[in-house]
Length: 106
Image (cartoon, rainbow, N blue to C red; front, side, top):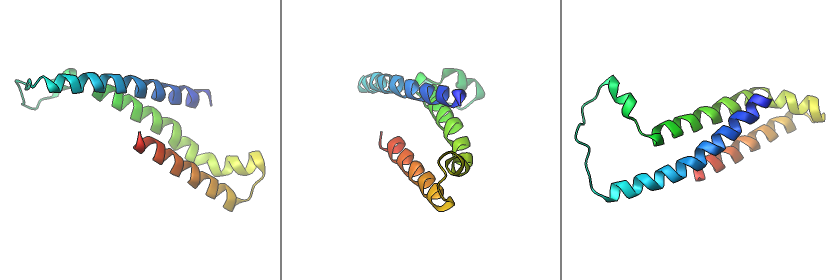
């Protein structure tokens, strides 16, 4: 449980930092400079900017914390609050819908 909270907090922090980095990158793009080398090689991984790494970290943290919860959420709701299996399934579906709306709208 503590690991999940940690990953959610990490995803939130990375998302906030990503907003600032994205704004800086937009300002950089307004300068009109074009990249000098467009060839593809494995060494390009070291040159990926902070936007890529923050997006990767955010995606990893969200999926690492949400997917395991989804797997056990119906059983958790039934055991913790004593609700029916249908209600627990509905509640899990609503949580997924809410998460999707928040993640993709930001």
